[in-house]
Length: 323
Figure 1 (cartoon, rainbow, N blue to C red):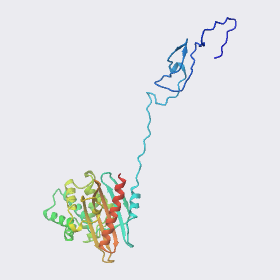
Figure 2: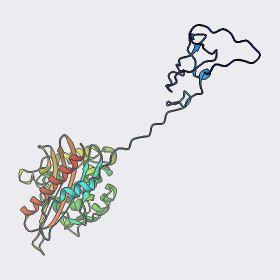
Figure 3: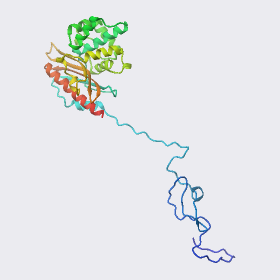
């Protein structure tokens, strides 16, 4: 500060050393706010002191919320995975012969996430046998009864060995197409229609509907019309398929933990094959439900190769998305 004298008064003799004004002189204010006080260098009659921010300088905006304010933290959105796109990309590696079609549907049981590829309806061939047995079990539940010994014998032969005569017997027991369609309405299958008369193998379905059927068997108890005992019964039969029929979706499993039902049917009019596979497979300790439908195959072997390639591609892509 500049020195000055009051007019009409004699100046006081100078003291040794620099004169300090009795007002607080802020030598340095760096703007650091700590615990509600500002530490500044202040001299009052030559003595240093601690001056609160309220008395020494105007309050500066606080970088932290006050005690009566609640700090707002913006949520960070979880990254989304387009599983439909992943499945479509994976299916590009699958060779589909001219005139053939394939459709795939996959659901991760542990994450309750699904994806599909391809559309349209297909003949079920023998995969409808799972649906027939599910409808029979539902009818037995409604009647509050167990399956008879004969029904169990038919069921075992129909699922494990894909016996057609046993399938025809149980097809009649459920009321043929009408009985199947009624059960499927309760199961949530919206695009499946039973075959005419005795032609259960010409039931028409979609991969998405077959996934819905598999959820009735392998999904959560709360999501199923089937009682736990009925579900366990179907699971056990699908896990003990005859040795010569252990192909299809099981090719995508990383071990022997799978349960399935396959279907294959040559069409009389064209000589081309319907080849399908549905079931549950385990990959890296995770369970997946898989349905692969195909038609227009030149041979049964060609259809089997197509179904297995599609199963592997779909599960590889879907499992990678699970991290």
